[in-house]
Length: 309
Picture 1 (cartoon, rainbow, N blue to C red):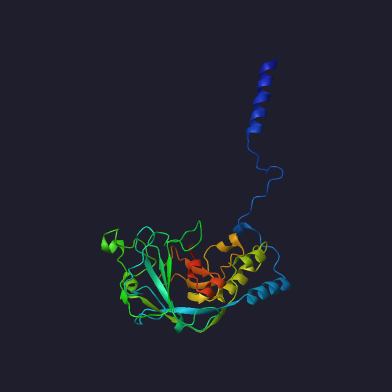
Picture 2: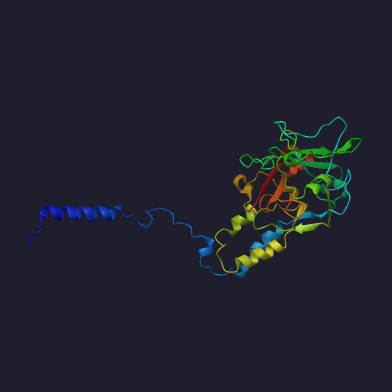
């Protein structure tokens, strides 16, 4: 049977169109190779002894002293002392703090420096109160890290004044204009009563693997055999739970890597998720300050940041 020339040409054109229409699985020339998820990577060679020693030396050389703060719900709270929640001491004539839009703030807690072991550049006495926003981000501004809606009040001395109960939660008051809508406190009764924080002895807090400086040194090594065991051992050696001093703890990434050298090198108040507080999905919160601002008692330079899984 003779072949129709026109039909043959049409067949060739159709085949060519189909072939070139099928997307290629090969990357374009010069395009970066797609990153393989860590869970699918084949483990590389184990870290050499000198590599481990170099990382360990850097980790310990950058250790900072910290004071762990243990929650003690069974202890009574008062005007002084470190604690979470409860009534806040306010000087005579001062009203409960509100944000710039007029919403009541949430009293997170306070540090009483007279009852803490001595930390370099920290006050030796006085009360520092921490208030956060009552919104779903607790007042944090992740786009422009700073205090956001949070407010800190430095009380170098306690004279007169009175203890003021925290405003009710919206779900308790039934009025969104007078209550706090969101709170990290798990138990409403503990939020109202307050939870004492008992300071422990000074501990050295080594540089964590989440710190941006350590992340730089770990770059390219996270697929090496045995690295997970090493990092887990490091994490077991950190000062865990609530603390003042030491290094900030994160559940995700160190946001400071985007602004290297900004000087946010002191943890004023580090808070974790436990039986009292819950930051999102088991997250952590930090109030950070440049050391120079801490020496000047300039608490307007504090950055409030929290993250969760």
